[in-house]
Length: 328
Image 1 (cartoon, rainbow, N blue to C red):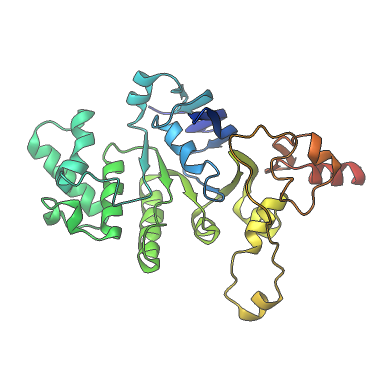
Image 2 (cartoon, rainbow, N blue to C red):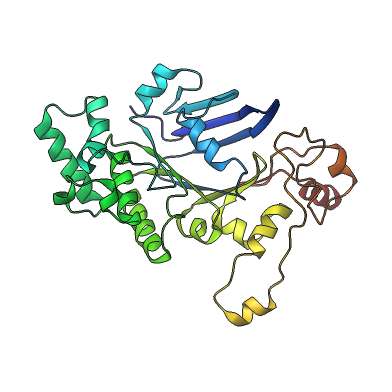
C-alpha cells in the first residue's frame, strides 16, 4: 500500500482516551492531534504520567479509544479491529521494558517468527527460519542464538530482539515507547545508533516517545511536548531548543544539563513548583496555570488552544497570542 507524497503515514486527530477507575474517569489523553510524514522522526516528550505511552498503545489498539481518529496509510483504524489488524503490517511498536515485552517461554526464533506466521508472510518452517536469521542479523545479533530464550540475553540484546520482531512485517511506521530508558547509558547509545541506521536504510518513520530531552534531541526531526494528556508545543527540534514558546517546555529545557561547565554555571533554571493536577479532575482554564510562573488572569478562565503562532511553531498558550496582539 502506498500513499501520496504529501499524505501522512500516521494521522491522529482529536484523540481522547479515558478510563474508569474507582468511580472516577481518568482522562489520560485529551484531544491529541499530530501527523507523521514518511521518513521523519517525531519525538513525544513529557513527565511520567502525561499520557505518552497511552497514546502509542491506543494507536496500535492496546488501549481503548474513547473518541477521535487514527488513520494509518490513509485508512481509518479507530474502532475498526479488522482494519487495524490488516494495517499492523504497516504499523508496529517497540515497548519500553525489554524484560517484560518478550514471552519467557518462547525461543527467540519463535518470538521473531510469530508475526510472519500470523500474517502469512512466509510459507513453511524453512522460510520462517531464514527470515528470522535475516532479521536478527539486521539488528546486530548472531543468528546462531535464535534457539535461546529471552532470559539468556542482556537488556540491550532483548531490545534488539523486540526490534527484530517489530521489523518482521516490513512496517512503514514504528512507535518506539521509551526504547532505551531501561538500558545502561553505554547500551543506549548503541541502540540509538542502530535505530538511526535502520531509519536511513529501510526508510522508516518513527514516533519516538521519551522523557529524556537529550535523547529526543539526538534522534528527532520535530518534537511534541505533552502535559496532562495534551500537546502544549509542537515544532521543529532546533526551533524548540533555540527558544520554546510554552512555559512548560521552557522549564523542561532549562533542566537539561550542558556539557560546558562554564555555560552550565551561568544557565538559569526554571523550577516547576507544585503537583501535576489529577487526570480525574475537570480543569477550567489552562491545565498548567497552577504551576506556571507566567500565568495571568486569562489563564484561569480560558483554556488555550493548540494553534500555529509562527510557521511550523504550534503552542497551546495565551502568552504568544498576547505578544502577537501587542506587536500588531
